[in-house]
Image (cartoon, rainbow, N blue to C red; front, side, top):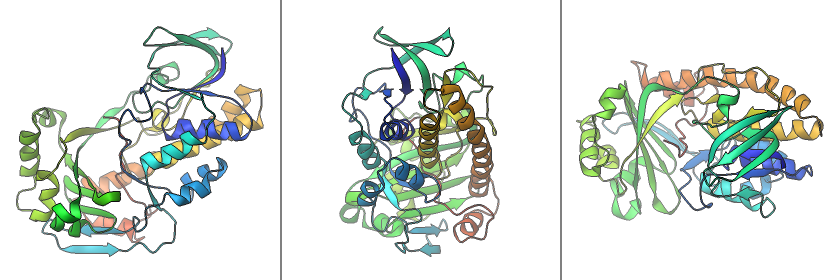
Length: 388
């Protein structure tokens, strides 16, 4: 039997495990991936001073975080479809939302945990309540574990969520197609120049090209299209060449250095349909189980997802430490605050998504956001995770 079982070794689950460790509380993390290197961990993340950085401070990892910051990554520019620069914000080095690579951030969290904390290759198949807050978690290999507290840190398609809620993520009407250019300064200089040192946003009503410069000259692109499911399903993503041509056709007439981010992509394009849970998603208190991150409050990407997951993990860890041995008191305190910030985050994420992809005035709503002309807190939108 394990006292605390954390399902999912993403940023939120690992932050929880680390904060518990700082407070001398043991936990076990169960992850479906076979190892830490089993798959790539997404791209760049901007870590905010009002949530993600606070979580790293609670985890005692702020200095390690500072060492993995990508210099210049906070720069942002907005272009029109013809490549004209509408906004160019350099990285001023202020550190309000410095950029790091998701994989690097996950590594420092993993390295901070005692050996054996994360159990790899543990795909959850079923979770059965036993009463009095205890649950049995069964894995794909037939093994099982009994736990006094199970925490769903397992993302959009959480296996833990059904214990608490019937809510399921729904398609929001926009899909991202993910592509990469490698060694871009040497091999794709025009696209490298237009992206610049940080993030690029080229938006029009119902579509957009969003790119970010990563380390080693990598340009990571998300092509956004607001289209029905049926339209998206008509693209054969098993044929990368055909898929790139079909997606690029939606940007006919756009500047070639922008469309090259699609057509010259050096990896097979990956479809990521954007889903969200109902705004204000919450549940009645159920003994011995709770959620954090996307499992609790999946929103359209707006730069907050990873930050909120880590903040959730840190807040849950602190609550468990403050109410040591009384899981129900800790969960009640954690969830009361979680539901408030989740509802607020859902409203802001919907605003950002709408002004970027539903607004007939795009990209000018985004420019207002980035320059502080919007009531929404300025951030860097469209950081996607790695789950389809």
